Structures are given as structure tokens and as C-alpha cells.
Image (cartoon, rainbow, N blue to C red; front, top):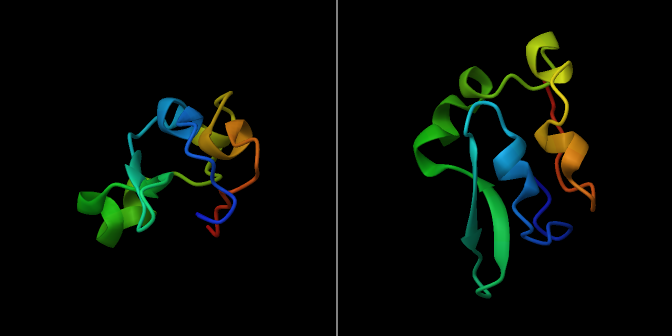
Length: 74
């Protein structure tokens, strides 16, 4: 998640099939998408990334992110 690019719109939160993301204020009180705290240590298990089950789902978090703030590394 690139918080410099994130505009806090929340489209990724709605698109995530696993409920991994939330929008919260950052250190400057700007809304930013983040991985939910309780899932941060198990993100690779909670998030399907580009697994075919998520990649085939339209839309998904990366697909709806207009500023391109989300990238999966797995």
C-alpha cells in the first residue's frame, strides 16, 4: 500500500473479497487505506493477492484503485 498515492476513497475496502482493508486517518489526519491491524501478521494468508480466485473477481482491490496505490507482491 503506497500511502503517498492513496486518496482514501475506500473503493478497495468495498472490493476486497476477504475484508482485509480499512480506511483510517494517517498521522496527518488524512484518510488512507490500510491493512486491518488484526490481519497484518497474517496478510499473506488473509489476502489472496493475484491468486486466481481473486484475480478472476471483478473488481478487486488493485483493479479499483484509481491512483494505483495497491500492488500485490505474491
